[in-house]
Image (cartoon, rainbow, N blue to C red; front, side, top):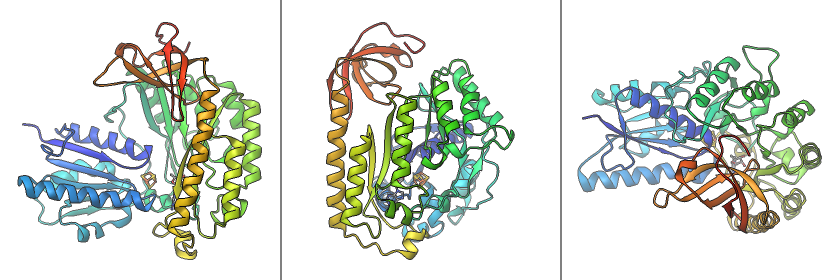
Length: 448
Ligand code: 5AD
Ligand code: SF4
């Protein structure tokens, strides 16, 4: 009987995609997927360390698996991968006796080899080497969960060293994937019926093809835009300081590029942005938003925001609120600052905003943002929008959901066979996190 694996993923899309790659590697090695740890022979915990709370989840999960093992007498092999693995290495073994493998972010491809070795090894295995090799991955191996959308890595790592951010330490310095390999992967996704691609990188719009000096991010967008069968292109995340005129003109020119940008700002205060080493000011950001909206009417913006960064005063936080009001983001991921190992902020700046004050600030910000989202959605009432169907409820297959080009979540009744097709939907009810409506026409293969 085939051995079974379970992969649990925390963190960003990059991690979700690494999990898809690890699943493909394990299946090639003869493993079968399972979705419960009751019958898993191997549990892979793919971890995130971007914030303290994300990191704590690893130890909670290890506790659960330990409980299961003592109740049932079954102890699966446990591999810890991802950013916490890279950061902590062998120290994880001191905190939990359950772990058999610790595998760093640059060593994903080694997972099946380590699993084979761990079966007979006397000691747990740790491989967090950082060869910083070319970020290639064999085409066709990735086991993709989503039948409609496919992730494509274009850049790994980051050189920006924002002072709060652990990523340069967990994912290494910036490495670009070859343009030819990216285009081949997009073609493969189109051939497998995927309609949407999401290009991934820490700073996607810093892309420069290693195999084509004339191809920057705008050039890459144009290249993937040419792939027949791909109808929507998204990417995460662009950095405000690399949103050149050429980049904006390219978005204008290419209709498959979705009318949504996730553009992290992190704070509304130029003083805090400087302490974060973001290399953009509040004014730069607001001017960029104006430019984007003038060039691409109706474009929806989302962002990441941190509250309680060291030294953030009530006035700085007010600046975050006024920027939020001024931009009117379509959605926002907001976080309480937590010091991360090795980062400049953790080494040099006192974490001086109290936990209570961080909680107060995030609650004020989230309440304001929720009201803005509800207002933006309410303004779309009665409109008919083009939805790419990406979800059908497992228990009630007639309940569908999908997204507009602007990234609004739209819920509506229909047929599970519409998955991966475009449906015009008239909006009849709205809320802060999505809208509801009725189909206004037949499901189609191409955007309406
Ligand atoms: N504390 C709080 N939030 C953080 N983020 C990154 N590092 C930290 C930190 N130390 C947030 C940023 C980033 C998102 C992925 O996580 O907003 O864009
Ligand atoms: Fe992704 Fe960063 Fe979390 Fe790593 S630390 S999983 S790169 S968000």
